Length: 483
Image (cartoon, rainbow, N blue to C red):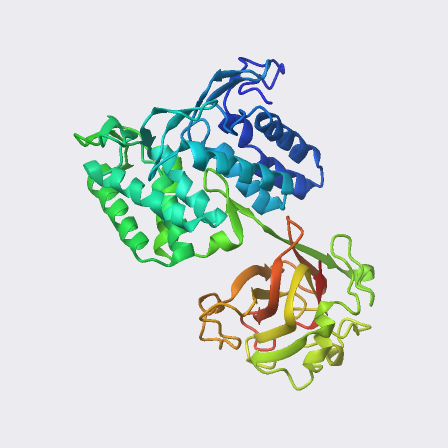
């Protein structure tokens, strides 16, 4: 388990006392670094720290508040879901979601079951002894309010909604949330308000998953209270006390990175949570990786061989799909739509009859693939080839299983597919303002190894050159690789 402090010049550490949040809140960032650099050591070290901490949980499955990383012994055996422990639980779940890690999924399931059994106290979560599970203090605070978001992400909507309702009672107790309350007496035990984001984060997640307008109304209450009580001429500031509304003189950076960001996401009805994992500071980590490669000159060959993107293949899932033009019109010189998936590739960089492209002034179009039944998709790969502005690829790809109540299998260009039962998988844009021509390969894949199980894919193609009515990309092939 890592030390909290290290001198980067000498390598010497300082102090062996740490806590679950410090130890467990590394794996998303280090794991992303491993995926991007192809060096597993970062993920492995962070995961080992997480496992070492998990292995020191009590017999009833709880972790304590402080631990000595040298001896592995607990310094404080108090357990809760507030500061010092909070993001340990958050990262167990998010590691499983971002990387498809089964160990983290198992650790999350075991841990949250213990938390819900022992730390939950009616509609609240308190402080307990990690060995006995006995309540030691009926205290809940602003930092605890992250938990409804994590429960919602895990799919436990009833518990998430019930806890967010409790959080809202805490907010309305004094007109803005205090740092902590005694939830049995409903008295403030720590009156400061340091512009915390967690309760707003939870409202965003719950609105996203339930579409319940009460969470928009909550957001309005939060925002109005911030403007009324925390705004200054220079920005926003903390409150020394929510009971007196006396202002402090500090605006933490997380107010911009988290508090305002989650308010924006809540009010904009944003769906980013479907394709991103937000770390504990609300920085987005892309679940889906869009890998772009480009060949120019002698590297351009009919085999479409790239360094980072696999070459096209025959008999992939797309070759068996029913491909339908939903919007737009193909150019008169374009190949038939079937050429997108038939495995037949052009032999040179300007061969219209071997490529699918949209017509003059059509500004792109939409194409749907129907696999006939849900398949588990590992990759979506697309290829293009042209000596000029028709080479770069610009499109969005959406996916659906067709079960959504408002599902529209043929959304017109006037409709946002995301509002009609489609999930945005990725936005691809390979344009380079300095040089456009060449051979492009794009591979869309998920860190977890699967993009999901879907029956349909919808490709929303855009023109590669905004000012050129001929600027529609020559698409040579689209492959869908089944897991």
